[in-house]
Length: 108
Image (cartoon, rainbow, N blue to C red; front, side):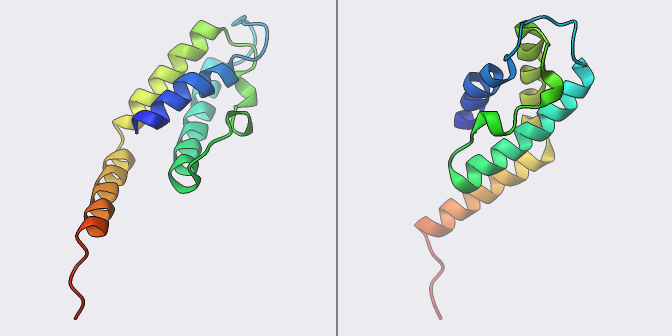
C-alpha cells in the first residue's frame, strides 16, 4: 500500500497539476469525487497489473485547480481510502494469499 501511496503522491498529484495552477476553474468537490474514484481504480490496477498510468485516470474536472488544492485533495482521498473497509479487506486478503503461498495446505 505504501508503494501505491507513493505513486499517487508522486505521479497522481503531478498528473493532476496540469494547467495554469489557478483555483478559479474547476470544482473542488467534483474533483475530489472524481479523484477518489480514480484513486480506487489506480489501486486496483496497481494490484492486478502492477502498473498504473497516471494520465489514464487523471480527472478532467480537476483541471485548473491550484497545485495546493490538488495536494490537499490527494491527501484527503488517500486518507479516506486507507480508512475504508475495502482497504482492510484487501490487506487481509493479501496476508491470507501470502500465507497460503508460503504454507500451502496439505493435499489429500
